[in-house]
Image 1: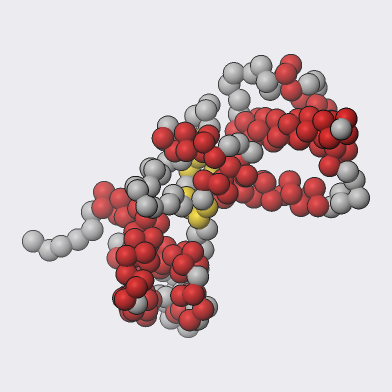
Image 2: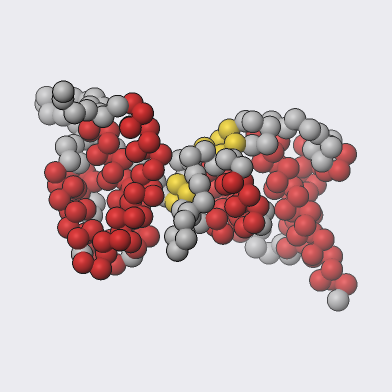
Length: 238
């Protein structure tokens, strides 16, 4: 019987790519076998020229960057192994598919993006709120890819990438108001949400049970501003 990759195996590999890459980097780094394996795969996998052109030896100096590139390479290798079709250029030469770089985040980083504690992030991992992610074993660290699906309490879904994008947008807006004090900034942001939802948090989203994904995100950010505002008031009283 010919050996092939089943759909189940494809899904398992896809879900575990980040963990596989981490194991390859951590377990083989002392003997440089991990680097050798990476190079062989990079040049052996089909339709990978663009990815290889953007690489240099410096990626091996940073374990996080190295692991990130390994994730990208393994996902591309999987797509080629299961015969994902590639486009054809006008010259008849197969086109090189664009390879999207997958960023991964620690629970500490995610706690910043979500505006919650690190403990809450780990609780969400245990509850399956980050689909396909489980707590890392002993002496290992959780790294959560940005293409991971996050499930809101309401059951609605989004991706880590979308959450991070919203957070960065919020931070950019904050930086653009540098001359405004933190207290004024958070008070102004709270006013925007109160105008949007026609009332204070405790009388609007704070009492609503079934929130839409947008409302859940707004609620988290709104509570963050309220907390920062309270701290600001305490500082002014000192």
